[in-house]
Amino acid sequence: MRPFLDMVVEAKVCGLTRADDAALAVASGASYLGVIFAGGPRVIDVDRARAIVDAAGGVPVLGVFGMESARTILTVVRSAGLTGAQLHGSHGPEVGRELVDAGTMVWHVARFSDAPTLHREIDRIGAGHEPILVEPRVAGGGGQGVALPLHLAVAARAAVRRRRLVLAGGLNAGNVAEAIRLVAPDIVDVSSGVEMAPGIKDPIRLVAFLEAVRDARPAA
Image 1 (spheres, rainbow, N blue to C red):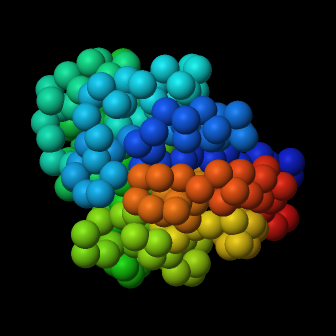
Image 2 (cartoon, rainbow, N blue to C red; image 1 turned 90 degrees about the vertical axis):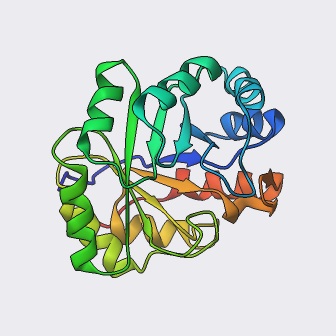
């Protein structure tokens, strides 16, 4: 585990559907943005994703994908001008490697509800240097405000070793500082915790969340 002195945790705002929300997130300190192609109430098309990329002003924007092939993912990434892909399907390491070889940023996703499942997910993802996003395994996928129990998040911090850890699931302005203090993630990912409705960000909650992340530090 890396030393935490003066560690600055970054934030990703996911589930964006509006360019104005993307612009506010960037202006308020978000380091990454996310748009969803994997279905659900926040799914958008390539044209709307491109508008969000334009509003991001160079801040990386990742597309969230399910079980699409690497070829399909690359087509969408290039058409929308995305920086990379967040892989929410049960892909093996081959898809991630193909995307990385094509110059696309990749975040892997590990979903689990207990320690044995965590380690199976890490094994499925395979070796590499790409960040691993961890979130609870719940019916219907992420974006439902369900938090990963902190003891499992701490176990994930150890399991990913030197790779960057992205903590997602149930985060909001009221609990993110404690999660950062206990888990020491490199990045925190928020969606429903800053919304007034699915895909519609609440400016007050969004700014408050990003301020809380900026001020938080992991425990020594």
